[in-house]
Image 1 (spheres, helix red, strand yellow):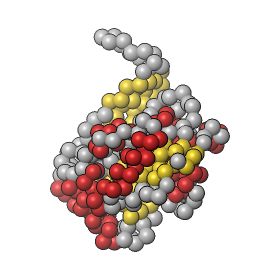
Image 2 (cartoon, rainbow, N blue to C red; image 1 turned 60 degrees about the horizontal axis):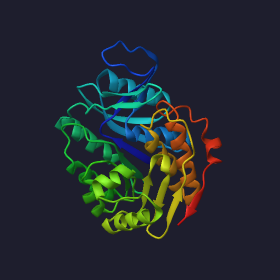
Image 3 (tube, helix red, strand yellow; image 1 turned 90 degrees about the vertical axis):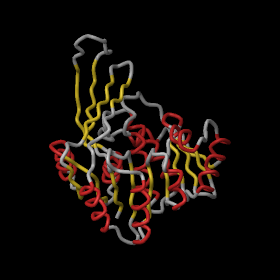
Image 4 (cartoon, one colour; image 1 turned 120 degrees about the vertical axis):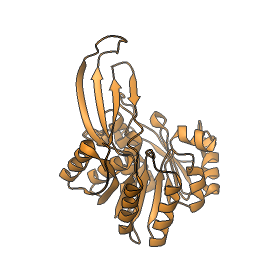
Length: 304
């Protein structure tokens, strides 16, 4: 089973309007509401590619209830840890010229809710995978990441990390199966750059030395890199008209894992990741994922 854990879930409100004007009434053309949170997105993509998945996370109030109900309507197993305050709403605005992202910090999490999360994680078993994705809400300290990884290791469950917290560098000492930084996180957390293939190879070497067993590096419109410690692959990104980049990295990770964890070819896994991420970047939320097959035709994968 592939489990995901999202400690800071959200509803994404995607707004489309004409170019914004300050100190004026700006009327919207179209608004979409999507259940969100990085691990939630990964599970939605895994479900799209017919992979069994189980969502764990923190939810609260009417907004949290909305997310859980939407996910259960899609026949995805959800085990919610409940908190009294409503789950946050994040706002993404596309005014035809610029993209704006308004991200809320999330509800403050109490000790009871944290214990619910730990209790729910007892379900993981040997041979399972746990993907920990997203930010920490107020009230949860970064040491919880290490506690969760150690719990999983005791149970024989592999851990995949997609987090932007600086503690990621320290967590590599616990040798997670895979990490998925983007180019900003690579620079901000590890002081590494990947502006060209040589820099990417050197960055991958450093990440492996720090403890990462496998690395999927997402670069937005610049493409993807993957390294398993023995080889490094580069995958191009197809050209799309950007609508919202908010969920593209999560989508790429979910698509990659849907193939890679089943032992499929790395090149095929990367190509699907790139096409899926691009399809989502050209959509509000995760979109309908109807263009992925066409986008695959634009993609090239090379082993460096």
